[in-house]
Amino acid sequence: MDTRLALLCGIVTAAMAADLPYAGKWKMNLAKSDFGQTTVTLENLPGAEWQTTAFGVTYKFKMDGKDYPDSMGGTAAWKAVDANTWEVVAKANGKVTETDTFKLGSDGKTLTDNAKQMKADGGSMESTTVYERVSGGPSLAGKWKTKKVSGASGMVEMTASGNDGLIFKDPDMGMSCDAKLDGKDYPCSGPMLPPGFTVAMKNAPPRSLDITVKKDGKPFFKATYTVAADGKSMTETGGAVASTEKFKITFDRM
Image (cartoon, rainbow, N blue to C red; front, side, top):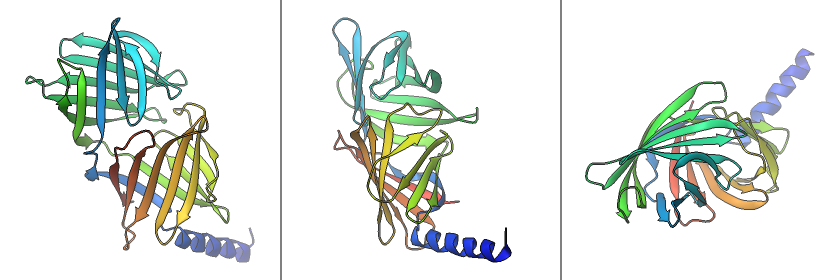
């Protein structure tokens, strides 16, 4: 490449990055994040059937270790290990994406989820979520509120694309969304992402990005990413469209 052209490309890229303060690589900081409004509800229905609701997603299943549709294009298989322990295997595109082990506390008031999330590169990362009972019972049945999340932290990567676009990536999932910042829907893809997901993104000056995620054309999730004035941290606030529960995730610039 001609050196003058290379220099021009570099200047343009730098200018675009300056216009998009959220461009860059960001690592989740769980210690500074807040999931305190989020809940998981598990209902024991007639006919040995169960129903779970979390992050605006509801689906039914049986505790028989078989795959049941999770209403988001994937499947989930639940089974009881013993009276106080349950295992869940989630799949997308026929591949295991996550395994969870739920353990009921001895007092029946806490529920701990040890999760192992598979990565697109063949590796995995582990996290732990502790819930406290809000209502219901006995055993697993009831409404559970998030108390603490710890363990591996994920990351997101945002890169300017063309004159008016952004590539949003989740490297762990191998997910990529290449969209213009015009509020219109653009497809997202990845080996661990079921088909039918789209994202709409809009720049929200001076330091924010608004996104809406849809599944099969229906709004599923909305969030705003806002970069701190010093550019060193970024906060994601939002939640599922079908729920009033909100969360805040803090990211540190890498």
